[in-house]
Image 1 (tube, rainbow, N blue to C red):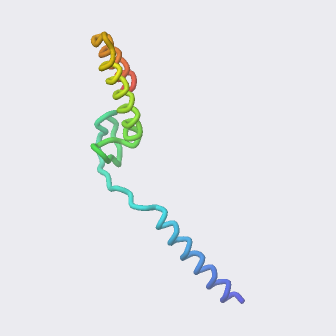
Image 2 (cartoon, rainbow, N blue to C red):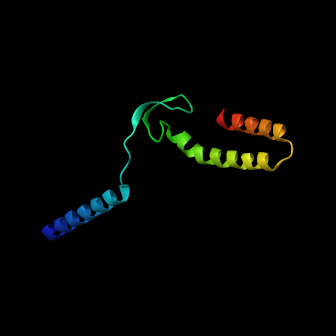
Image 3 (spheres, helix red, strand yellow):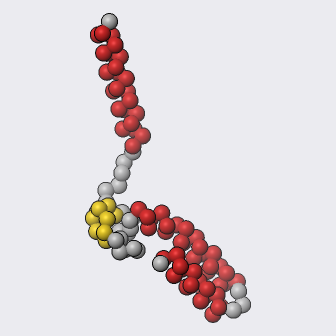
Length: 94
């Protein structure tokens, strides 16, 4: 009896390990160093030397900047709109 149970356990463990390996996927190699955006040292930087936090922030910053740029283009008072854009970006990047 124990032989059948042991074999079933081995098969189950092998199947589980195969599924775990398939779900993990490939992780891009990174490099150590200082993040270009926040200046902190991290053990793994990827995508233009950015840390994980800055990589997550980047798309939202870009979207907000694009919205502000459209507002500048469509507004009559360009000087005021540009000042608003810089104020907005300073707040995000601070």
